[in-house]
Image 1: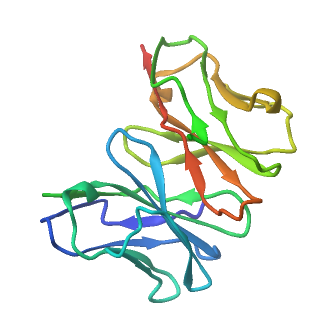
Image 2: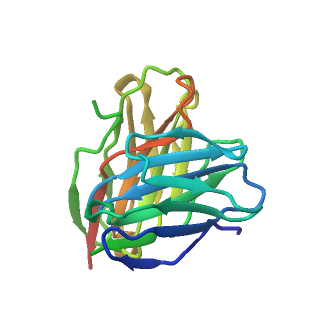
Length: 112
Length: 116
């Protein structure tokens, strides 16, 4: 079964550094998402992306965050200047036009 | 206000017991979708079920069953004859359609521990 692939599985960075989290959505999917989960808490929506632009974003997704689909396969989340509170598991997800979201296995980001 | 409430933070059961995980949702939309996801210790989110607001028929899949009650805005999940491999955090989630939102609202999750 096709799956959403996320790399790296773990990322450690220093506060203030830029990080890029990478995702390869399922190939025929049209909608792309980033969610995050702070340790022990619920999964929270960050941003959705469709037709090469952001379609929706949450209040968490401030100016420090950006997303890009640089080519036909990758979907990236960039955090410009990481803060301690950015430490979380970041999930990429994708879907066709239906309702079922397929999630990747996540990238655990640790900001020191 | 929480759109999805999972009041049970943690549940422990002994293997082979049945267990029900509660989910209560809140929405003004008449068209919406409800989901359950499993998050095992490895961290990934595993899709279990999707149910739309027009389909109140309960569903059974092996040891899993779901009870959707629109009258009480609940979408409960029962595991029959639990196994150690069922130990995970289970999330209920809501997708609203009419508001134009295109993202899932997750509950806070229920951590299930099945004791051998």
